[in-house]
Length: 232
Image (tube, rainbow, N blue to C red):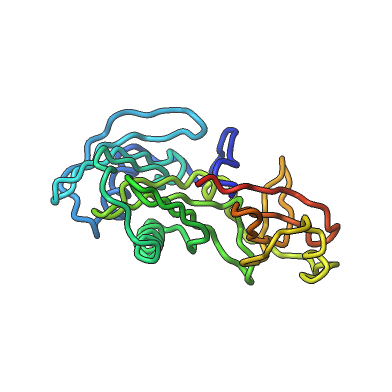
């Protein structure tokens, strides 16, 4: 859910650093992987102004990597070797969390999509007072060699301290808003992006007619904010 919510230009409230400084930061953050060489490959402006690097590890793995010009924060990693067999769900979640945390992203695994013939994709987000913060989503791809992909644009663009208002409704009332026949398998509180707003919701993971859904009910108005069908 909400894995592609950041569509527009990303602005990071950090001072601009040089390519040299960003490269040094990359080297320090990835030291736990055993960096052999970092090569600067220019800069790019897309959703975010970034410096581009090619990184070679001592184990032979090569990464294409981007670091933000503002702050020199690693925000994107891809590997041509991201083709290994998928990990088990729990192992992939652990690997993804450890990797994101080492890069400075304070997030927890919240959703996993497992591929039959490719990597396991783990979505991570901050969890504050039991609320999943979806606007700050981080995406990590994990195969049998470890992390082979990373994207943290949502976190860089949106992460901040948040205070939640007291909810006017409760979980039991919100459940009554679900479509008839939906069976709830899990529920959480979640802050979800909707246009330019962030809405505190009840998140219900449901099953109906052998299909899996995520349904988001506004915690105050009880309006349905969003519904996602899981594509298998």
